[in-house]
Length: 439
Picture 1: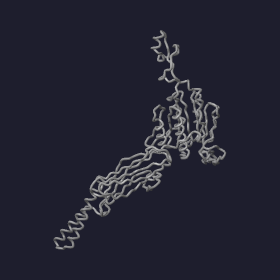
Picture 2 (picture 1 turned 90 degrees about the vertical axis):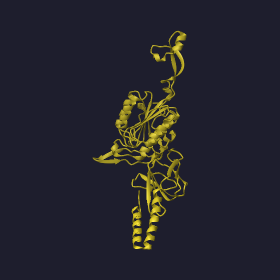
Picture 3 (picture 1 turned 90 degrees about the horizontal axis):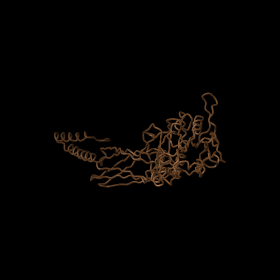
Picture 4 (picture 1 turned 45 degrees about the vertical axis):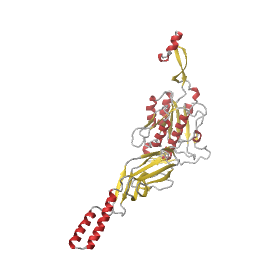
């Protein structure tokens, strides 16, 4: 509780002055002390109950949006008592970089946080709504709250404060773009699916029977048909149309994570992963996402395993909205460790801003083991491995600028980064280095 001018001792002082006035028979002292006691007493009672029955709510037109979409934020303050409020200040803690279209976010002692401040005067049982428009320009989980309420008496002698701890979240998904904007072919971008779609069968869908063969599992036997025909019959399963696509996102933008992060490269890699996940779900893939980054408050790598759940894309986009640039392990170690746990026919797609020897060596070992691999790099310093069985794409930004230029050492302890030249002849968003044939 804050007390800017008065406190309870002023009431005691007023009583003392009254007693002195009575003893000295001074009407002026009695009048002044009585007035002071009345004002202080009324103000003290008013302040005591100022925040009783005061409610603060915030509502969003959408809880989950994409970058650049408008969101309406409505704040609602209600005074549920007979006592009016001559003034009420509300400080709602919000992200400092929140793009408020029609309003202002005031700075706070923490650089990443700010305050949405509002001043009200409420009558008895009055409710006031205020509307704001937000246009988030960055992905992330935006936390709103806690809220600080401040009010007091009509004369401004006393002040009461209260903190409401409840928080609410606005999830901003990364940008999702069609494949042609990324520079990827829209037909079979990850290999010729027709060549391998009949290799795998869906045991939940039986399309017929045939005679039992020695290599058939007993679980394939159709017992009713076998009894009817007096010989063993095996089930024929429908070829599965749901292929597995597992996206591995490398949040490190340098081969050595301790060198820092290139924010533009990280955001582009996240956007590419989100775009591919959206495409895969639309094409009936079972899409999964694994990243060597973490979400805030966790030290574990991010994992969304492939699933048929209709909410799978939402889960992936939420994970990508929250992932940070802190790499818990190298991407090559993660791909090597997780691949044995993934379906054998899955396509493993690696999205990375930087390509280096250890990563390429790990991918080649997985290729030799029979894995289907696709490499998407943001750095032009990436060899084309398509002829070696790893479909390769080199993607760049919308300006045709290489996000991660190659670096070379000119002297011990000196790092020289090659200048980035704009490539005006490069088609927007990407230069695919993969050939049209399947891998």
